Image (tube, rainbow, N blue to C red; front, side, top):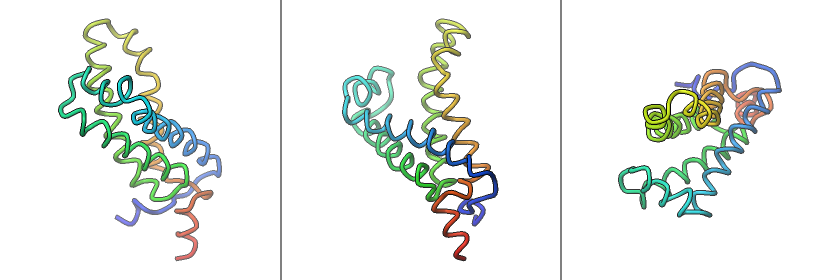
Length: 142
């Protein structure tokens, strides 16, 4: 369990992956609140997710909170887990139907950001936040 919170080894450049993943999730989460009809409740209702008026703000909050944690490198591995869940649901509910209706290449084009965010979050879960993180500072103190 403690490994989940350990900063891990690796190059300082891991901070770039944290910035990439965290900034995209933070931005997408904020936009669910800023543009609810297009990206929040309205979008969730359009794709048929249950209780969109509850689910969209919940997902937006998770994306904002976990995205910020990832950027800071605080509880990074723990924050990566809900982000992976969000991406699995997003791919399942939006990209799999596209695969069935329009084929592989249309789905591959539309899923490019989803795959990048999924793989980035998975990378952070496996490797950790790197030496330039709050997690690493806590690890050095203990």
